[in-house]
Length: 205
Image: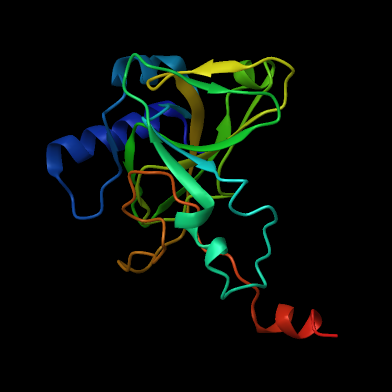
């Protein structure tokens, strides 16, 4: 069941007062009065200051089967950009960039979430996506996938309300925190992708 804004605010206020072992935390904290009065079922999140672009000239084609090719490494594939508050990043038509949320998020073991773009941006050609789900125990800034599918360049600036986080309850009978390469990150992360053993067998001549 998706949690509405008043329940989210209650959880965040309990975290502030009790400093419980397994809290829900969002830093910087949203305006709790506005969030509670909105009646929404999501939390608006802002665009952060770090971006990751692809170096097309260094890797003209992405081939995950070439696991020993150094050109497939994240450091070779991408370039990191820091955009200060007040400055801007121009996303041109048909271009793609990884960004982050400004907010640092921590989910307890009984909550999971998912992030979607705001429709007001989508109607202007800016598509915002992220992982299909944010798992219980996640801690860090969320990596966002930003694509301009429109016909004109779009200016985006750190601090803009860019996406929305939905939270829902999950059954949890353990205090173990999930393990992920994305936990604890402040900058956009490309992540590792490689074929598993079955994919390798199926790809064999």
